[in-house]
Image 1 (tube, rainbow, N blue to C red):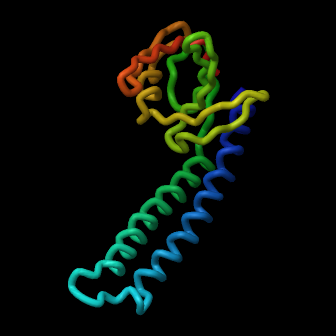
Image 2: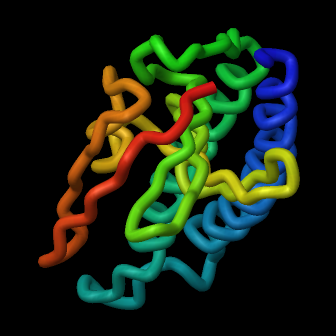
Image 3: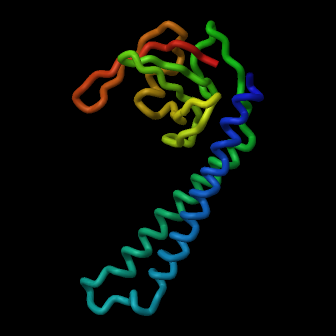
Length: 161
């Protein structure tokens, strides 16, 4: 099973690589804008260059995070889970909520990306998210509740792979 779940990680890596390329182009543009002669302040209230510099700094930080995430994915050990195992990172979890089933791949990074597993969509979830936190250390058959705005959502854990 772990080899099959590794395919999910292999789907995620090019998505992160694409994000890295897009962010690198954006960073290059922001860096150029920050140092461009037209960004020189015309008066003490003109902050165009400073704003571009802040943007470039934030993008550089995000780019480093993505590069580290990619490195972590490339070196991550994907483990198999049984119905008796508690949920932990690299678990593929099937949930039911209000009669609808959904699948989540719990990873330390890559939240929000959608992948495909046996023809079904699988959303990447991190332990830092409300649902990820609720799922950690739970078992098949457990129910978890999370607050989504003013509503409470309840999920039943159907399967853990």
